[in-house]
Image (cartoon, rainbow, N blue to C red; front, side, top):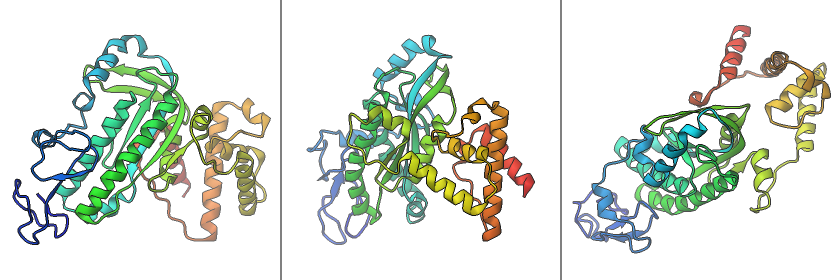
Length: 345
């Protein structure tokens, strides 16, 4: 058992640190409360502490190992009815802010222990609101609300889950600070939109196809969120604005004005379709009526041209380094753009 003051590893049943004499505390992985070292259960939330230590970590590559039975039974009972269906869902991304810097300061075993506690909180809170975790990354998760279990209030459930995780992480972050002297916070991004549910296996692994920017925009929201914050895309905001107190950012009109000013500053010859392409990339309402009449292939060309022109123009002003992160979420169109851009450069 590690002493939170001098960080010495003591024997498992020790009550006091043999180096500094401090009383040893056993932190509850569910709520973060500091319990007596000989506690069998957390006297704050009732969590079984010794049972947890004896239980092996869940295999996060196998959905069946971390999905509670009540939720697994529901999914398996309805899977034949929903495979191939189009569903409107809310996608939640969550990851640890400054994860790389944190992991560099700890041993691999400590990182594993820290992330195991984090993932346990994530799974408990997300499953509480009947969300399903579609993928684990090294430092976060992607979860769906509204599929495979259909819920009309999927956006509300996703918001409640994000806020619930954030509250639990505040206590867990205090534990990490006490144990390792490191700040531990998560950030969240949400977006709502259509997906097509694919096959669902006996192991609960679900394939799905995102329609449009449903997944990408949720990931984008997460990437711009500050540590400890939850950012909603416009689609989710419209669905939940009556249920939560939400601090709204810039209006669409203000964002469009800023885009036009910046684009015009870079290149005064930018055409209306190029501006429309940028507006679509940012999921804004498009001002140009003729844009809606274009074929998908034409829209894609204008989007590629807009990004190419902006990046090349920026590189003429100062050295430009493009870093592509989180490639595990990349879609086919983004791969095609990067290939196209590489050929230009």
